[in-house]
Image (cartoon, rainbow, N blue to C red; front, side, top):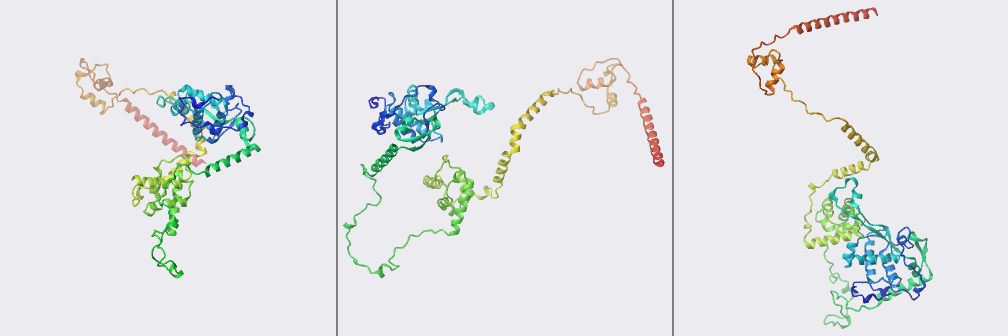
Length: 486
């Protein structure tokens, strides 16, 4: 293996020490062939097993690089492995995305150097392809038909899986069940047990060694009681004098919390755990103890919930009560938290009867109803398509032609017109009215007499009415005759 310390472009202080990961003297007994075939660098075809913990990946990388299996591996390879191990902690399956540009900026390397050392890790059997990157726009895949140009472009990243080659498990003395990516350790050999015992003893010896640097001084400087001198007073104290209540030190004055106040604080803490999502993993008693100054000052659970919802918390909290205590002390120190005697939210602004909460539950129940989901998934697209087809089949109505409405009887309007304004003997009254309604020029013709209205239609209406009345009388007589006959 080449001497990596001789490379001037590598910062030795920022790199892990390869010598610390040196293997046992019998490393030469473990045969290993570099994985140079690209077909064997996939998750489905690799001979290495899956790793989930970042510490295991770091140990495997130090072993493979320190053993000298690859002639080009060095400190930069371990630096890249350290970056991959940090990204592994974000995934429970031990996978991580490989962004060449971001990795190069983080390590201060060129693109070609990053790709070269990533190839070295794959050839050592430490990483395997889970998904190959491409220039396909991942935003189109995410948004589907709703994609627009405003979403922009983002290429598909390469996803690697952290794996451990079989030679590392063999050197560590592990017994493996299965082969390939799904293989799992099931025990250790005698050599592995001896190695683990030696490692524990080494760590214990390192902890027992005295520190080289000076320790941080405490607030109270310890003094040797043998060097203290007692001046004056009595050398002996009688038992009666020692047990006298006047001579006993008085306890510090503290505001004692009653049982009812403690129960009230626990009830408020339990209500907060239902309102704030990141508090459900904590202990209600510890949370009530941390929030006791605010509860004693008069803060209600609505005010506390409104304040806690504004905090930005990480995705996972191991101890929510400790986080609340730390944040309260920090906010009070910087003056970002209101005074404890004034709640940040009044009771008039909150939902005392829980109407908003019940409305939220009702809306959530409706959205998760099986019937609604079936409608939204199966029936709604079909109904919308049919409605669109029906709308497209109906022709668009044309604009109606303007037709003026008569505001007076036509005879009166014709009588108001002058004799010189008539069209002539062949013109109808509608034509004359249309000329005035549409503001058309009226030509002047010879004088024409108005047509005499025909009154024959009135006689026709009278005859028709008399006939209907006679038919009604005859029908009534026939009905009476049928009834008497029956």
